[in-house]
Amino acid sequence: MFHAVVYLDHHHAQVLHFDAHQVHAARIEPQDRRAHGHGGSEHPLFEAVCQAVQDTCEVLVTGSHPVIGQFRHHVEAHRPRLAPRIADYRPAAELSQSQMLALARQFFVAHDRMAGLPTPG
Image (cartoon, rainbow, N blue to C red; front, side):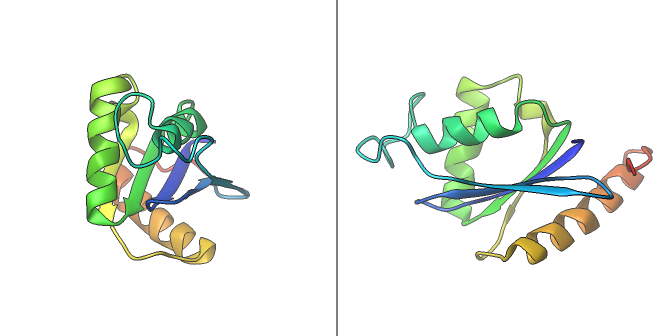
């Protein structure tokens, strides 16, 4: 799918891949809880999120300001090919799936319009 929205906190991530007709949701938990929170290239939650969105054209990342800052650093340092596909990092309180989807749809319509791109249907 062309778009995804991610919500990150210190314990899990919620990822929604979507287009005009369908939504695929996934909840991501870190595989190794002992390594959780220590950052670095092996951060299991961040790596799992990167893998989940690696084939997505445009991604919106939301969550608490500190966590999305850490994720941004992780992407730039360890997944530089993914960095250009992340359209924005937006601080947000935890959202329901329907709230995440509404936020992302609104964001991508405006983002694509500003970039002169048609939003995929």
